[in-house]
Image 1 (tube, rainbow, N blue to C red):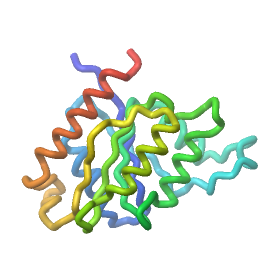
Image 2 (cartoon, rainbow, N blue to C red):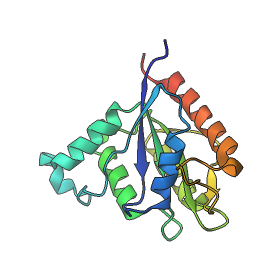
Image 3 (cartoon, rainbow, N blue to C red):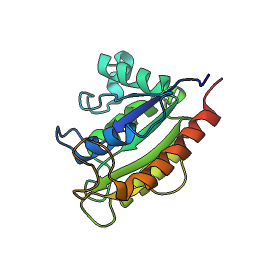
Length: 184
């Protein structure tokens, strides 16, 4: 019997019709049945402020508890001004504090995202590799730059045939990493 693993998917956009949310949902459909997915909410987190550490807001505790409980985190994000969207950076900051309670440490993390541009979300992924590495995450090697085009996600919400094998392979590698690193 396969063990069930929990994958938290962070979408770095708070836009209702986000193409990155669409991509995340389509990618989740490629995961094996023993991977259970959640989408931790990040758009209700207050801006990180050390003054709030003494009595953390409930939304922050909910978020950090969800990430702590996950066996892995898939970040699917747009690129804002060649870097991270503020809402995503804020969530990462909350998860990294206080220093002794960093929820990212030793957490398997995979990075991807989509945009209409030819290089997809290459630069935000580069920044995320640096940030998540500094925080002690185990970031999946390789690159998953995805250019958004009408055939990327079909009418049923599935990854289209042009990108399916590539994204399936990336997710398969990530699931293997999660299985290797998850506590027994």
